[in-house]
Image 1 (cartoon, rainbow, N blue to C red):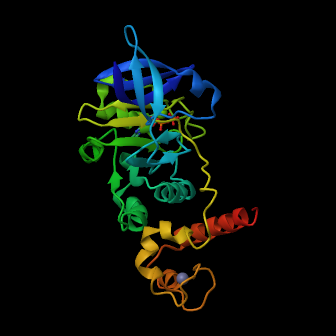
Image 2: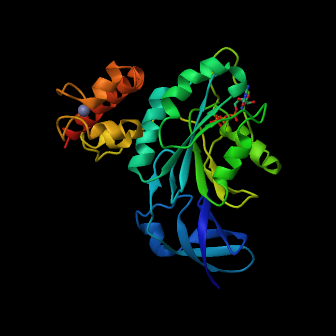
Image 3: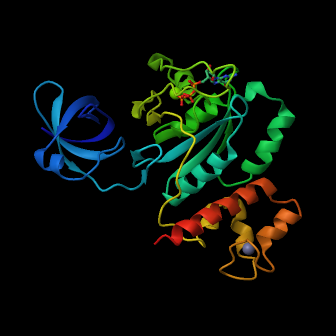
Length: 293
Ligand SMILES: Nc1nc2c(ncn2[C@@H]2O[C@H](COP(=O)(O)OP(=O)(O)OP(=O)(O)O)[C@@H](O)[C@H]2O)c(=O)[nH]1
Ligand SMILES: [Mg+2]
Ligand SMILES: [Zn+2]
C-alpha cells in the first residue's frame, strides 16, 4: 500500500510517519541513505507499507518552508514562548526569532508565559512593544490557565512548533493543552533561575482539536538567515512597516540617514528605543555576514 504522510519524528535511524490515522515506523529507501537529503519532522513523504506498522520512505515532497532552530519543515506557525519572569524575557532572542520566522515564511505567534509571576503594570511595558504588530500576541499562565483557550484555538488544525529558551514553560503549556501526553517538565533551579533543558528532541504531537504541535528543547542562540541583505532586515520588523515608506531614502537602513521616519519615531517615543537598538545590533551582524562573501 502506498500512502502519503508526514514525519512526526526521527529517532535512532528510523522515521515515524503519521499516515492514514496510524503511526508507521519507516526506514529509508536505499538511495536516500547515500544522498545528503535530510529528513525533518514536518516533511511530507510517500511511503510503501510493509508488515505490521512498518514502512519505507520512497519520496520526500519539496518543503514549503524550513526552520533550523528548531529543525522542522512545512510549519504553519512558530509559537515563540518567553517567560515574563523566571527566566526574564530574552528580547534579543525574541527579536531574532521574529526575524527568522518572517524571513522563512513562517507565521510567528508571540506567547508570554508565567503571567502569574508579574503584575499588570510590569506586563504593560512588554505588551506596549510587542502587541502593536500584526502578529498574534498571547499572555498565558499554566498556573491560572490564563490565555490557554486562546492558545488552543490558535493551534487547531495547524502544524505548529514551540520555540524559546529553556525553562519558559513550553512543555508545561503542552501538558495543559493535552494532559494525556504528560511530557517531562523541569523545576527551575532556584539559584540560577534558568531552565535545565528538560526536553531533548523534536517531535510533532497530535492535538485532540486537530493539528500537530512540536515541543522542542529550549535554546538561547539563533542565527539569522545567511543570505540576508542589509536592506531586507527591517522588512521583518512589522512595527517599522508603515514608517519605512516615509523615510527620505528608499534604501534607508534607519541608522544615520537624514529624514528617517523610523529614527524620528524612536525620538518621539513612539517606537521602543531598546527594540530599535537591538535592530541596529542585528543590522551590524547582517552587514558583517554580507562582507564575508
Ligand atoms: N509560575 C509559573 N511557572 C510555570 C509556568 N509554566 C511553567 N512553569 C514552571 O517552569 C518550569 C519549567 O517548565 P518547562 O515546561 O519544563 O519549561 P520548558 O520550556 O519546556 O523547558 P525546556 O524543556 O528545558 O526547554 C517548571 O518548573 C514549570 O512548573 C507558569 O505559567 N507559571
Ligand atoms: Mg520542555
Ligand atoms: Zn529610515
